[in-house]
Image (cartoon, rainbow, N blue to C red):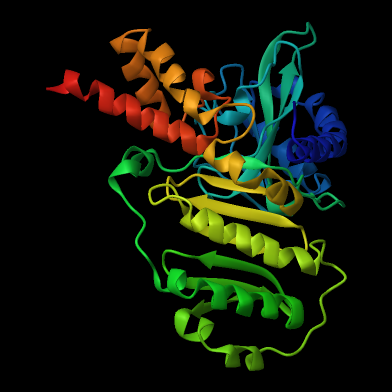
Length: 378
C-alpha cells in the first residue's frame, strides 16, 4: 500500500510526464534519419533546444546506450561525455520493451551532485527497429513544483535504532540526571511556557538535562535551555505572554497528563527507560526515544490511551508471566534457531515469534535467550 507521501510524488511525476512527453516525442521523429551523422544530430538539437522549457541537457545515444553526440546545453556544447557509456545509469533501467518514453526516478547527478531526473525516449527507424535513445536531463529544482504541500499522515510509527546500542542494552543502567532530580519543576515550567508564552514544540532530553523549544512568534529558530535556565522561573520573563493558540490540537488540560506519563516512562525501569520525549501541541504528536534507541511517534490521544501496559507488556493480549512459554517454544527449535533469532533481533528485524509482544518485553526475552546460550560460547 502506497503512503500519502508516495501518492503525492506519483501525482507530481504524472504532471511532469504530461508536461514533458509531447515535445520530446515530436523531436524524436526528426532524429532517426540522421542517427549515423552525429554532426547533423547536434545541429538539430542546438536548433530546437530553446523550445525545451526547463531542459538542462540534450544528447543522443546509440542502441547500446553509448553517447554519440556532444551534450547540448543552452548557448553551448560539451564534448566531455562523447562516447560515454550511459547504459548503467539509473535512468536507463526502465522497461523500454513496453514503453517508448520513460521519466526516470529522481537521482543524484554524477557531475553536479544535484537531484535530477532524465527523460529517455526510444529512437526507431522507419521499420520500427530500435536504433538509439534521446536523453533529456532536468535539474529537479528548475522543474515546476506541485501546487500542493505534502501533509504528513499522523499515526503511530515505531523506528528501531542502532543495533549496536540494542545489543548492549542490558549492560547499561539509568543514571540519575540533574533533570531527573528536578523533574517536577521542569515540567511545571515547560507547561507554563507552552500555555502562557507561545511555545508550541518542546523536547525533553532527560539523560543530558536539557530541553529544546520552538515559539509561535519565531518558529524558524529553536532555543536550547540548560538546567540553569530550567531551574529558574525567571526564564518566563524572557518570553512575551502569548495566549494558548487556537492552532493547538492538544487541550491545555492534557499537557500535564502527558508530562506525568513521561515521568512514569522515565522511572519505570532502570534498564529500559525514556531517554527523550517531545510534544507538539499543533500537530498533536508525541515522540519518544528509549534507552534501547527505539523511537516512537504517535498522536497524543493514542499515547494517553495506551497506558503503561502497552510499553511494559501488562496488556490483555499477552500475559507477562507467560513469557517463559514463549522462551520455551523458541528453545524447542534448537540452538541454531535461537542464535538466528538473537542475530535477527540485533539487526533490527521484526520477528514473527515476538510480534505480538511489546518491544520493550521483546528485548527482555532476547536477553534471557542470550543468557541461556552463553553456555555454548565457552
